View 1: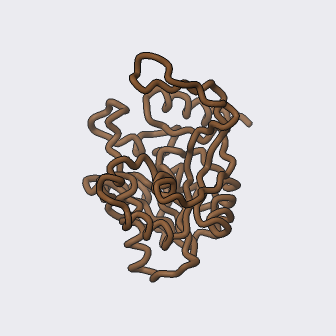
View 2: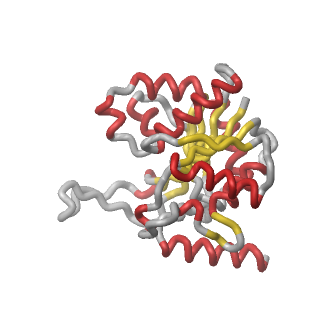
View 3: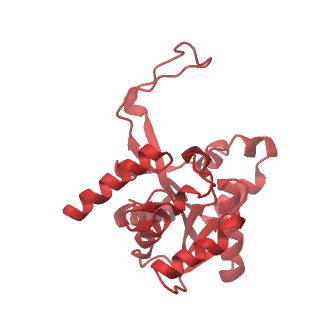
Length: 237
C-alpha cells in the first residue's frame, strides 16, 4: 500500500507569529495545509493520507479539513512527535495499526508548508521508492555554495555541479525506514535534519527525484509573500 505522510507538527517559531503555526496561515483563500492536502488528494495511488499535528492543534486541524475539504475517509489527523522524524514514526505506527505491515508499503513524507508540490513529483517519488527503497526530491543548486567551519572565513567551495537543494517529498519503503530509525543511537538521532539523513548515516543509497523551483517551503513572512504572488500567478494563467 502507499501512504502520504504530511508533517504539520511545527509551531511556526521562525514566522514570528505566536498564536498560529505557519501551516494554518491563509494562502489566498485557504490555509496553507489545505492547499497541500488537496495536491495529495489528486494522487489516486495513495491509499491514505496521514497528517501529523502538534497535540494542541489536532482539533483545529480537523476542523479546517472539515470546512475546506469535507468529510474525507482518506485523511487521518494524528498527533505528531517532538521533531519531524518522531512525527514520521508516529504516522508509521498509526498506519501499521490500521493496515498492518508489509515489505511493499511505501510512505511519501512531505512538509505541510510546501503547498506547490506537483502530482508529477508525488508520482515519481512513489515509483522511485518502490524501485530503490528511498528517494529525496531535489533541485540543482543555482548559487555557489560556500563552506565555513568557524562561521568567519571560507573553509571550502564545493563543485556546484555536485550540489543540490533538498525539498520534499522524501519517500521510503516503510519497513526499511522504520528499521533504520530504530537502530540509530540517541546521539545519531540528535544530529538528524531530515529522514534522508537516516539513510546517509546507515549508508543506504537515496535516489534523487527532480523537484521544482516553485515547490518552496513557507518558513518566513517573506516566503508567505512569495507564495501569495505564486498563487496570483496561477490564477491568471
